[in-house]
Image (cartoon, rainbow, N blue to C red):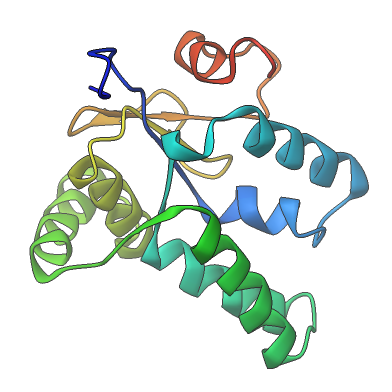
Length: 158
């Protein structure tokens, strides 16, 4: 809850949302990702540290940006939103999630970090849309039919 007693809905972003926002893929996706991120109040978004590491990797390897440019992009995201560290406890739980639910360890770390941060949503195009674990529901923000919680979070702007 915030200081006024209102329930604050938190969402975490997966790497693909940031990759699109950085313009690595098609222009339409960049605009969509940017609109989604901009529609969510900054205090309602968190970034798992794993996502920032993956973003750096994609910017250097796939987008062929210089490491300095990739670092600058990651620092901008880091400064804009709360970052959830990958702790030993998150890693241990993520291994259980990976084993129990057939997720990659990297996706499991992101999901568990989102749960530990108190998020209700994890916005991801790549993970299983609708899957819920630890109070976090994975939502594809690019889906044709918008998710109700995402619509609530964006004020219907999605």
